[in-house]
Amino acid sequence: MPSTAATDWLASVEAALQRRDPGEPEFHQAVQEVLESLAPVVAARPELREHRVVERLVEPERQVIFRVPWQDDQGGVRINRGFRVEFNSALGPYKGGLRFHPSVNLGIVKFLGFEQIFKNALTGLGIGGGKGGSDFDPRGRSDAEVMRFCQSFMTELHRHLGEHTDVPAGDIGVGGRELGYLFGQYRRITNRWEAGVLTGKGTGWGGSRVRTEATGYGNVLFTAEMLKVRGTDLEGRRVTVSGSGNVALYTVAKAQQLGAHVVTVSDSGGYVIDEKGIDLALLQQIKEVERGRVSDYAERRGTSARYVTEGSVWEVPTDVALPSATQNELTETDAIALVRNGVTAVSEGANMPTTPEALRVLREAGVAFGPAKAANAGGVATSALEMRQNAARDSWTADRVEDELAGVMRSIHDTAYETAERYGRPGDYATGANIAAFERVADAVLAQGLI
Ligand code: NDP
Image (tube, rainbow, N blue to C red; front, top):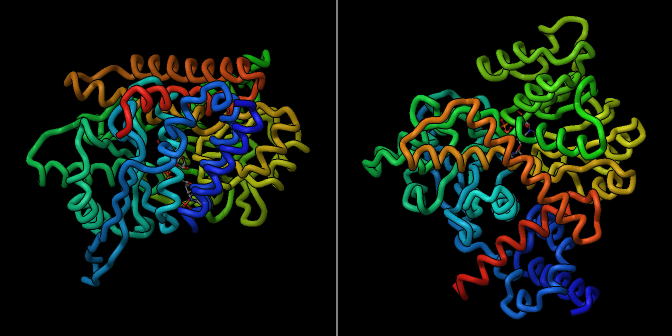
């Protein structure tokens, strides 16, 4: 098939999806971003069209939506909505995190689940794609309220899970505390010690060392690989990071270990710029122990730090930008500011933080760009290592997990880089990652018949 016919056909698949799934803009955006890379593969492999592989990949295998009733500390009745989208299991059990945030709806969960299929394929570790969550907001809730919510959520979700079926983990709003309550309720209902049913567990009860750190660490390792190709590294580089949650904290940590000078973190209230460099110990105390805000950091840090509530963290001049908060947080205006200030690399710790318009600006300026499904795959890769340890009833040292993580990130980088070269798009990691991941999933889908 000529490439233009393939492009037209992919556009028709996308148009049909937009008609069929209206009101899901983030899902449409994620699908469009993958489909626009695939024309050369579809053109070269007519069986993909004949067997409708693309149409099968954009339709989840199963979608579960459920009511989550719980009681607040005043005895009031609260109702939230729970989701689990089991998107594709051609390569292994559904795998992907749970997000608790008021913005969660079906379209958000589908965008995340769709991305997860390809991200997980890139790890090469035998995991399918899924995602879930709720519009519950854990912020400002007591531990007892969070526990009651998690117990109610798992009371429904448990019937869909299993170490060989569907294995959730954390995401925005779901960290160690929430995973503990979720695992406890699963264990209680099923009467099974099934460690491999959730990842991101505490290291004392089946969790893997370095899982907490893995997404942030992995993104920095991926960035270092991109810089190496360009004959440089992170030593002495100025780095800006957005967010101040799990991914952001360990992005700061690894970037500092590699000699970078990290000057920002943020949350939904604003950002902090600290010209002396972020004091990680202070930030961790405020975020992980006190569950505070970045404004508290600025207050306690002294004169080097400033808290800014207007504008965007991406206006701060930097060599390397690592968005680590949420989707569509880096806009076209932000990308123009970054390029004007001489940014050389942008790598996505968060899922889909860069808008399509911003990506075009970065591409045209020749900025090295690490797409989320490659750059932030270290988290789910380490989750797969956690499943491996659970299956063997084993517990690896931190050094061993970090070595494996570094190997996976190098391999993902090389796969995306080489695939982009092969398809005539040198240096275009987004296209390389999309094509390489799609081919792995598509081959498995084709081999397993029409199911
Ligand atoms: P956390 O809940 O630990 O932290 C999220 C951070 O992002 C917080 O600082 C939060 O600020 C900020 N944030 C969230 N929503 C918004 C918003 N709408 N506007 C501005 N800031 C916002 O989540 P994670 O660190 O785990 O996740 C961050 C990103 O990384 C997400 O895109 C997630 O999907 C992705 N990711 C996470 C993985 C993991 O292993 N945890 C794996 C792969 C990807 P505030 O407190 O004010 O809301």
